[in-house]
Image (cartoon, rainbow, N blue to C red; front, top):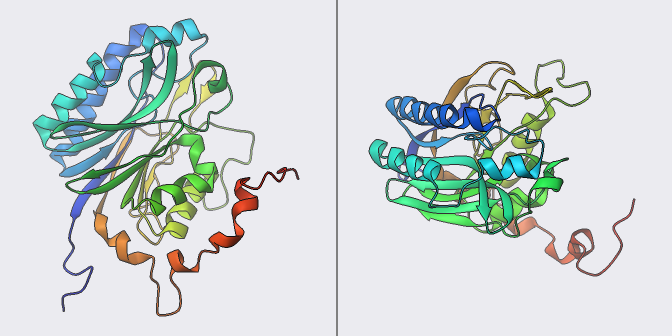
Length: 297
């Protein structure tokens, strides 16, 4: 029987790359070469949407703004992005990756979306974590990009702690969210009895409440005294991980088969439960700060 979701209208394999880029200008060339190898590997496995971690070409732990400037590039005309554009064209795939962007004197923690046709768009991280506030300028918008495989929204790392981000992307019609991350080890407990971390649960929750798949690619390894959490995952429209959650230590690529446009019907659960219709937007202004009420607790 043909329905709105049968047969699948945009069925593709997606990949979340869990890698270990290292900061330091002496490491940048090898970081970029590694991303190209990982894109090629995922493409050989049939992935048409490949997500790499936050700041995949530079590493993360910049000591100073001066050092960050040495790693930064313009978007889309810098050499790293041009190499990714050529890789996406060569492998006929879509790539999301984190890069350190410079525009004028401003530095941005940016996620870029590239396809076989070239550069599609970028998202600049809006919620800056810890020392990022001393180095980067926060972004100011949540774009959703139309592509041949579906509508793609982007977020970066700390954004997943703010439920408004995924909801705004979903409300704009995103079919899938690509999440580039550098989740860090924080004070314990890091994992529950099932071995899962909070970042994974937050990703599952955002996916579930918005009925939208999320491809979350994190990094692993240690860098200048900090350690990264791994635990990359790919969720379906119901929020549950497809194929499990990646290890906290291993460099790996995880894959899932998704129908990207299935999320367009998934918000309607039954005759009486429709997530979009059931939202009480008439009551949300105080929560969002629109009426000037101080948000103190």
